[in-house]
Amino acid sequence: MADALSIGTLAKATGTKVETVRWYERVGLLPAPARTRGNYRSYGRAHLDRLSFIRRARDLGFTLAQLRGLLLLADQRDRSCEEVDAIARTHLGEVERKIADLQALRRELADIIDRCGHGTVADCRIIEALSPPPAGAR
Image (cartoon, rainbow, N blue to C red):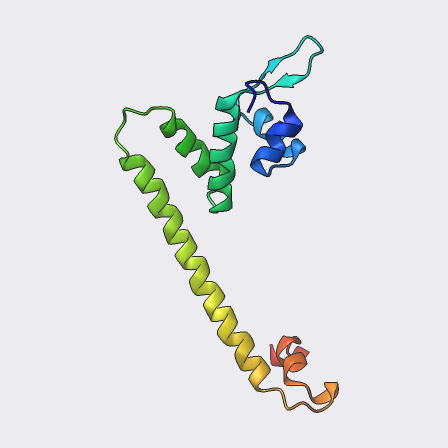
């Protein structure tokens, strides 16, 4: 891979949209690249590595705030990884809560579907479960 990468090449190499690369630059997650004589962005290996890190963290669901913290810590290689661990543990807790919510949602949907009598829509238990209660029942 050449030392100088265009924004399109960088985007393709990391599976990122070009506009997203520009946005990461604007919000300070990705440092601004050098410019060519024609004023085109010219990215290097460090940009590729950092953008790959950003993409992987986002794929794992880290928030932008968590990602900023991780990037800050990643740039300080001699520090203890306790703060990195704390960020990851916090995120894991959030993921576990989401999984619990999704499992509850799954049970509720399965229950609604199980109550379907396969009759007419007028008697459909799924439609009934999704509809608001009558005005006097609230």
